[in-house]
Image 1 (cartoon, rainbow, N blue to C red):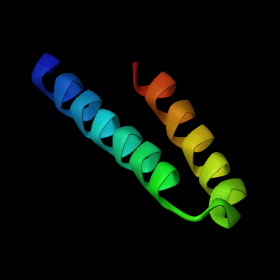
Image 2: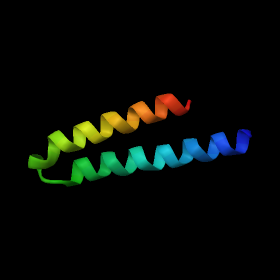
Image 3: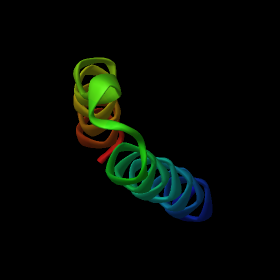
Image 4: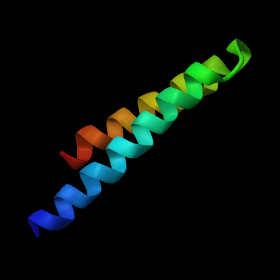
Length: 49
């Protein structure tokens, strides 16, 4: 069971890091959707943990 939790955490971490990189590398016009997506992924991480 613990392995599954660690697996979910690592997936969530990769997604969050990817979104942060995506947000930083994108042109500034795409910030509002990225902020919403990042907030949603943060909520998912908190729900998992």
